[in-house]
Length: 81
Ligand SMILES: [Zn+2]
View 1 (spheres, rainbow, N blue to C red):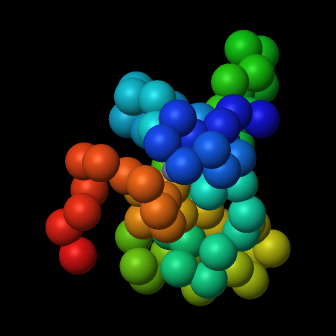
View 2: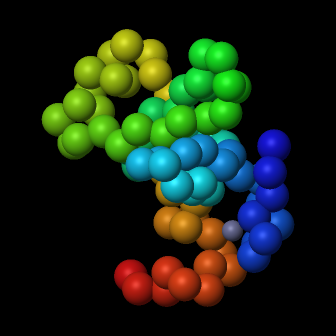
């Protein structure tokens, strides 16, 4: 597992739309991304769910992850709340 350079918390780095993006490693009630492993290359791939897809994913037992920048205590670039 990777570690956030800013806050030193563990993160999962997954490709989101082709870009390496940090996610919290735990399933979160506010999570709106699924993370799967590429079947042959092994890297993690994140997919953002639309709000109306989340209940179905929950019912299917999928874990939902949120962007780490939402919970990062030291994020420099995302202070807008
Ligand atoms: Zn962080």
